Length: 437
Ligand code: GLU
Image (cartoon, rainbow, N blue to C red):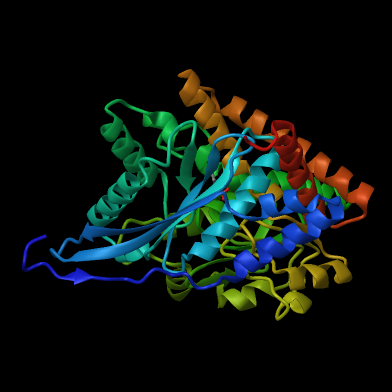
């Protein structure tokens, strides 16, 4: 660092987050329904290890800025820890803890040989140039180099990161160890060991699960079923695109700027192409609404409360709360995001007879295809897209069966059933392995 460089410090965010409160409340409810032994409950409740990294990044203007990032390994009983890396201004240690815990249950629920982890950096990626983003990613990866590995902890994309982020992570790790290690991260571009179908996997999985829920609720009718999707990132956009392809009417969708609504159905492909144009600042749905008259503009809050059959929250945690749960019109909620519903809202939905298909089932398609990617990388053999989607469907529907069976047997909601099933699987494995030494 030379004398003329300014060092700008951002402070770490250790503020408590509602997401962690939610994750713990869900865990406590499921664990006590299972009648888990107290010591086992304590073991599963706390993260195994937590890392905070404060690291400098050279900005394009020559300034050096300090950033804070986290990686939490919640549990590694079933295998290497697995989970995404998020770049967002609101990232906090508590949020990452919650997301890591949900990854443990998600992987256990769908039967993947993984534990759970999550990471994040406090940064708004829209404030970074491409070269700043690359330097930040490479530096963060280099900080994490001793805690990630193909058999230890395998990151993936999440909010604010994508396949390019994973390419830089894979390259930085590989340069450090001296040979190429594709299996250290998943969600990579296809030409460096990514998997067919990974990009669409989470959104597609959400719709596979939604269709199964509609079938079981006896309201399956793709021509007349109206969907509202909150979020137009990787999960929301691919869920909406796939739903439309299957004949569903997506009547509302939103991004950070707000939402667009048309009761006759939106042209998702057109919205997708509009918002993915390469200009700065990136075009938003609000810009679309300003420039076109085939949609009405609504706020993110209004969007959630619009008339529809299925609501797919696919953005952030803590969106369906005691404030708005009474006003939701959907008959079915399918959680594309992690932790979008608070425990208070869960109770209201249960009273109102609205089925909530929980995150760890509904959005497990992403990590499932991440697992396929990792297997392909380790075997140095790649599958075609038909094989990926066939196996994805098989695994998700099997998990759905397990949850439905547990829900009926224990007379609990799908959320509690999913958590019970997953927690039980990790608890059993913990007991089989025993306590070391
Ligand atoms: N970030 C995604 C999730 O929340 C995917 C994680 C992964 O593929 O490892 O499930």
